[in-house]
Image 1: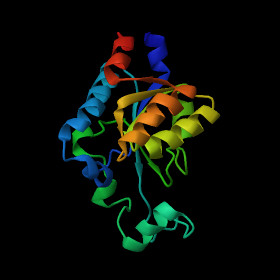
Image 2: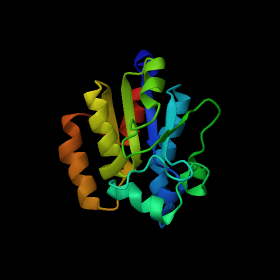
Image 3: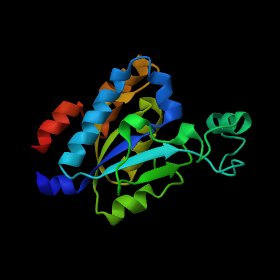
Length: 189
């Protein structure tokens, strides 16, 4: 298994202050993410954090983009803003990259693919907020780029539980192995 693990990377996507804060009425929702990060580190699997953020003045945001044009009008989500910083419960350690993306997919406008290819990573273990956003978009693009994909079902959150369920149970299994964090950890030992 160790050889396989060297080709895998755990992606922790959009677990940044401005997004995590929407789910903190129950801090236990972060436990699966923390457990996955801990297991990855213990098994020498690279952990890569992905966040969404924009430059001052929002030069990356098109007025035609429904999601992000609202942010550019209302302010916030700049690279230096506290809302774009990785949540304190999941802080990267030295040498764990924090990739900045400019759209929903973790690949869009980021150096994620260069980072993965330079480390010969061929398997992505996906987790993030939201299941219907970054996880779905990244999964689709990663599949098109011929990565092997695993999705940690309990380390994905979505504001709509039914959308989360449909994606996890019906859509994602077409392109990925879907399992819970503990089941993934069990494959590492």
